[in-house]
Image (cartoon, rainbow, N blue to C red):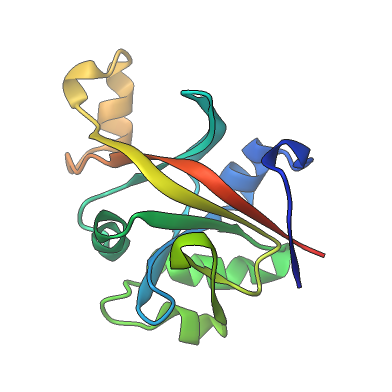
Length: 168
């Protein structure tokens, strides 16, 4: 069971949530969605709104869903789901129904944004902005070589957090 909460009441450490525990980025519809594991992103305030920033490489199948959707979700899970999140980061939704393979049940948040009932915390985000990362703007040249040896640069999305669901 989930409870809607104000994002300002979150007590979780966002650095640990995103960087250590990972998250699932999901977009599409409850009937047809795709998800991917991510460990890059941020939460904060921009333009007077609570926002989440995510990064997706164009070759990822989830990219197509985020591009077509007005909303995406970020879902955070307990450590018992670590293997499932690893699968969602290693397998493509083009070949595997990740939700089925992980035993996840799809639910819908605001804007019919898909998320998974097994999550502990869900952020429903409405897309507000996107921009492709441009290697000409890296001030630290090591980032380009270390993170982009294939020159497959991420697209950054900023989404307004319009709903926060926390497991009760």
